[in-house]
Length: 341
Image (cartoon, rainbow, N blue to C red; front, side, top):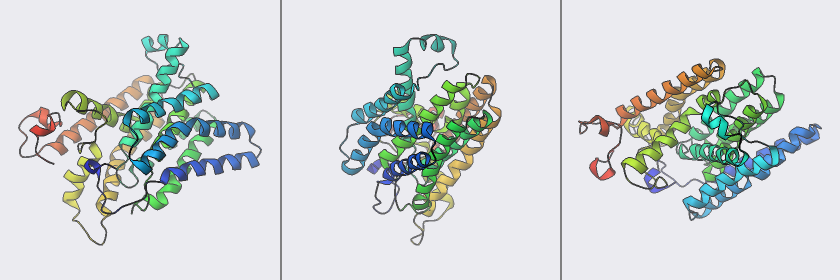
């Protein structure tokens, strides 16, 4: 983690992504021994497709020298490989103009790669507090599992639950005390897995609206889109550069740190409570989207509600006694025009 985004008091290994890959290999072996040939083959293909994003993330975790462009290209490459191996290409997004364009295979491939890279990077961008990225991934995969269960799709249910399972195993060592971090490799791997489960759900179930899946994934997606907007267009900085204005960081510094006093005996407590606070905010929307967002209108309403809640809380957290302008209240001024928060 960069210095600007560091909220831990001691060095912690960032190799948790290895546990995800090994866990998925173990799941593949289990399905193979259970003679579930189709599931085993898909697992192996997905693991192969995940390699570019996983390996580049792992090198970054070890060296801190991989460029933003290289990492972005790797997260684009993995969903493209999955498209080739599994036919996991977005057939529609339930937006008329886009759906017409998706009938052109090259455009569909680009859109699929962009969506996959976006989800992978969105999980990476929220990875900063013990358990936050892993619990978010479990929440999303669990809700996708609900959709698969409702559609009687055992195959997708297995994919979703194995992804959630490896993240749950990681949490034993990550939450609440943070003895190991997932790093970029783990975040990219989980994000890739989420993206592929989502794409396969859309491919296999024509009646399922893509908006429902977006509503389930809304929290990390909103975070990454708003972060790009804030950095690129308002603060006039590269979206790849770190700052201290992400939603989870503001929750830590402006809310949790004021409620929970610092403790030398439990330095991880504020960190873990930040995750608990964010999950309390976001989990109800994901579950509502899974159970009641089965129409386009309901799913969009759920997304809009999450956007408004995110912006309302963000504005309140970033606002201080120095803030007289609502634009500043949304964290939209360049850094040199705001006080340190």
